[in-house]
Length: 103
Length: 336
Image (cartoon, rainbow over all chains, first blue to last red; front, top):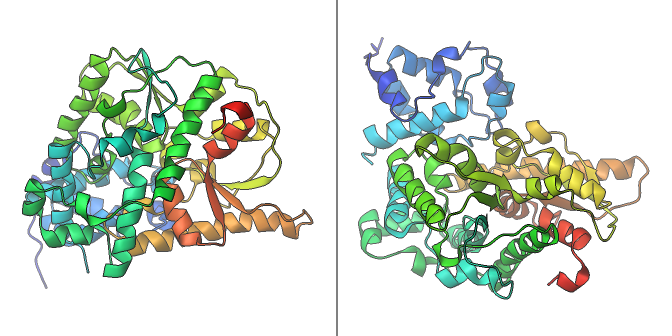
């Protein structure tokens, strides 16, 4: 079984893209995935959990998913936890831009 | 041809840094719409286009080239390379916009200017000094490039002592009203979309229109900026019957446009779902006994319009809301 390498600084690194990053408000209910127009199953609940747990490799493996999000906020308007999903996704893009694409 | 995401974002960000737009267009193409309108330069209140409608014909032209190539219009960009683009503006050579598309998009801006005049709003325009808002770069998460660009936009507005900004499209509205205040200290501009201004001014129609339309809310207007009632009120006052699709208002279904720059096939699939909803909104009424209406979808955003029209082909005709508002609220003599 593969062992996940954890980066305890991952949340802080992602937060550099926006101080608004509030993934910890996610209750993992799945309403976001159910209403997503793009049918994205992973975003945002699993992805945000990866960030909170410091699973950097798993975040980077989901680059296409992160950039597929329409930022349309259909998930956000249905979220009972008040998670700033669109802004969180922008923060993840900022993280990938810097850490993967070296932009 | 799959798009290299990093190179694509890099090129767009480079363009914004070096050429002040993600897709640089000639000054003439950006300002042509205002010819003959005698709008003063600058002023306390300005109409700010953010170049969104002017950019669309160029994106459409590149999108046509994309279909021949097999994937995103940006694939051509990335094929030539980010390094080349730093020296030469590649977009200038990639595709020529159609005169018809340019005229249609320019007309939206003319409509808005005439409506504002009709509402007795005293406003100016920044002409060639007006800059793109940076919306795409914001969405793609290139924070540093956005901060630097937003500052340039703000400096131009302050140079002209602007206090009130009237926007046309939802993305520019969102950037200037909700995003810039979070990244520019002391940001003090009042920003409203023209739809809000017209509703607030209580503009009355000079002509009653007939017919029905299916309304498509922009996600950014509806969920980011709370612009939901104003377009409906303005259309209803004009005599238009507004049909609501299954997902409408705050719960509107995205046109898919935001995925166009990186994943055009996904964008198209999403737009097709939305077109089906909008068609159903019109035809359901017909099945209930009403006479066949004009099957028109109304949009408030240039990205929604181009993406939905592309998906609908000939099955549903889309018009920007200003097309109807101009007819109802402006005297014919002022209608171009």
